[in-house]
Amino acid sequence: MSELIKLSAAELGRRLAAKEVSAVEVATAHLDRIEAVEDKVHAFLHVDREGALEAARAADARHAKGEAAGPLDGVPIGVKDVITTRGVPTTAGSKILEGWRPPYDATITTRLREAGLVMVGKTNMDEFAMGSSTEYSAYGPTYNPWDTTRIPGGSGGGSAAAVAAYEAPLAIGTDTGGSIRQPAAVTGTVGAKPTYGGTSRYGLIAFSSSLDTPGPCARTVEDAALLHAVIGGHDPRDSTSIPQPVPDVVAAARLGATGDLSGVRLGLVKEFAGEGAEPGVAAAYRESVDALVKLGAEVVEVSCPSFKFALPAYYLIAPSECSSNLARFDGVRYGLRAGDDGKHSLEEVMSLTRAAGFGPEVKRRIILGTYALSAGYYDAYYGQAQKVRTLITRDFTAAFEVADVLVAPTTPFVAFPLGSRTSDPYQMYLADLYTIPSNLYGGPAISVPAGLSEGLPVGLQIMAPTMADDRMYRVAAALESALPPLTPPAL
Image 1 (cartoon, rainbow, N blue to C red):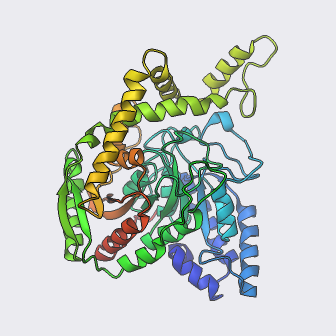
Image 2: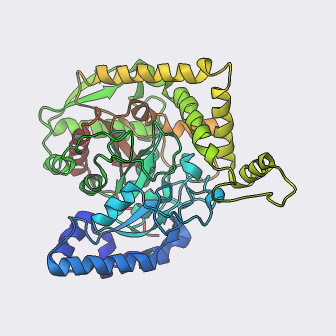
Image 3: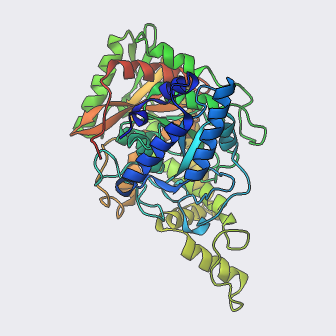
């Protein structure tokens, strides 16, 4: 195994800039690693070896001229398969989009290319980002590098597993209810959900438009911040994009790494203070808080009573928006078409296409969302859920009047065995119990490794006010500096 794959993205960027190593060497090392372990991990749906080496050669040419595109020029990255990539298959983990090659790039993809990052492939995911374990991919599950009998989290388990397995130092995920943070927690990596609207959704295959947020996956907080700085910022093509610059998240991460949190107020969410969590997760949470206090942070307890309604509110809002967004997959415009033999009506073709092209979890959420939006039920279900969303936002606002950031476990439990929850959707949904409130509020949140429970990683979640992404990076980097790094077992 090449030592290059163990280096952080920041260190790779420094070595590339100093011409100590070439981008082609770096890309080749990671592509070889993918080839060596993919049969055990299945983190990728498509590996673009030719495209990656071409991009690496272009990066080397820029470095030779002293014209690097940025600190990550030439660094490999995996991209979740829900982000459109021109000419490269983008399936959203679904059979209904099998083989689709978009004619355009998402804004995030464009920014990655402009910054010189080398895309090595598209990562596996729960179909249309609906799931908490990456077991609902139409192309088979991804396996957790810490224990390949267990899930890597979801929906972005492919991105987290690729980073944990040293197949790429960086990856892009999307977070609708915790789909970056929860996989990060159970794979011992760093995953950040930026402020909603702080990263562009243009070219993101929509699941729930008021919640979906692209963000970075990495092995260190600094690396996540560097990638966040590349993909963040206003995009006029996205109507929900915030017309403000991204806070200086890289400087905040480097400040936090000094280990000084003097004057920082940590809000311990009473409702999420380990309640309902496995004993090992609760213990790791308490130890992480103690470590932050030793760095100078002040602890205050805050109560957010509406958080206990976040899970049911989310599972009305997100499926409702999904039933609207996925109506475009009708067998007429693009993607799979079933039953078009001249004997079936247009409505029958649509029905046959969706029956064949959508998996069980997607069908479940479409049915739930369509019911919640139907005449006579809209006010009782969807309308009430939106009112709860307002209450959750008020709880966050009140909490941030007395605390700079809020902390809680990222997930109630460590990675569970593959297949153990697929027959019980409610138990599966509980994986996002602690992460959903930030999505409903729209503020940034990050998961950082916080130790082990029974030999498996645990994550600490740090939540900040909207457009205060720098705060969470500072605290996350401080915790990272105070705890020993996690190293997954050799595959």
